[in-house]
Amino acid sequence: MLVKCQVTDYCCRGDSLAKSNVIDFFTNSYEIDMDSKSRRTANVVLQQTEQADDLSDLTCTPRRVGRPRHERVPYLPTHPKAKQKQCIFQAQGHNNLPNFIGRYFPRRDDPYEHTFYCASMLMLLKPWRNIETDLKLPTQTWESAFEMFLSTAPCKTRHIVSGIQYFHECESSAHRDSVIQSVE
Image 1 (cartoon, rainbow, N blue to C red):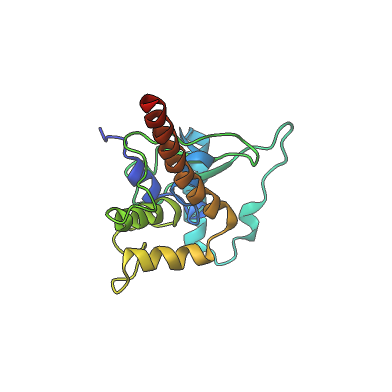
Image 2: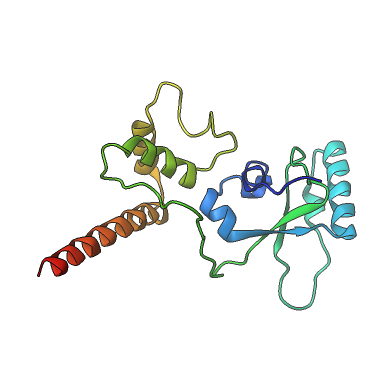
């Protein structure tokens, strides 16, 4: 019996989800058991992929009645449960919020935690498979890698970074207000 590991799930996500960062992966997909039909289809696709150069005929599937089926994304073969589980990619417009357990993310403006802040934001927002090699070059600092990433990041990613800092600013403001009220 294998223990569920979200890091393994993220690292071994299918190629269709390769450009997903940690937040996108966990808010835009969920895991289900593969039914026997999905297992057979996955095995047939793997066999045909190995045998054929032209995969255009693999995309032809019979038309179904009703709501379109969500995209199924198999895990990479290196995932311990690649033959039993698969990810379902959510439809656009769904509303899921991530729930981070434990300590909140570090502050951007704390000089003692700035390196940790940059590493945390890269881990959260930059797609990676190997955390040791994909987040920064060996010659880069965490700060320079984060600044380079942020300079080309989409607007949505910059909003997430701003929202994380906004939490800290609100917390500081509430703390100042409570101190002022206790003095009065």
